Length: 136
Picture 1 (cartoon, rainbow, N blue to C red):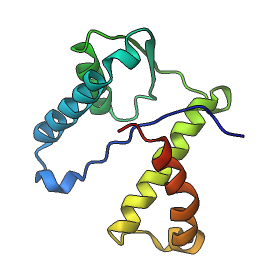
Picture 2: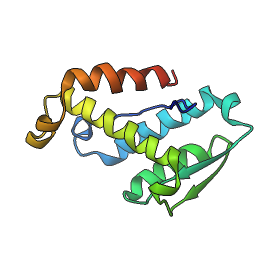
Picture 3: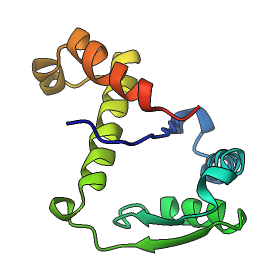
Picture 4: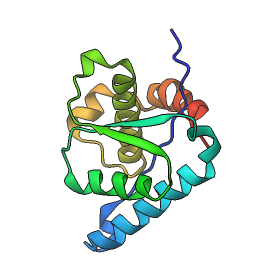
């Protein structure tokens, strides 16, 4: 089954910001804001629902700050039960694959990840599929 979705992934390496969390947050807010403004016409007729479990409070702040200044209609839902939301499961899968991709690129896969993950299979099947769905 193929879901009719598109996605956008953002990746940040915390250590590149020398523990300057505010600098990292500014970069994240700017990039999210620019993404939403570049695709404003795609989003303007919809209400954006952000499903986030509040696991990292600064991520909630970043999402809110970047969306608040776009003028787009949005809301946060904090109660997320993955078994109820297929798109949440898809998003969770995509972020997991993107994280594995980063870890592999930096040769930072753990021993257990190396046991379960075949690099060629990951690239050929999952990363390739996600790249096709990526919003540019």
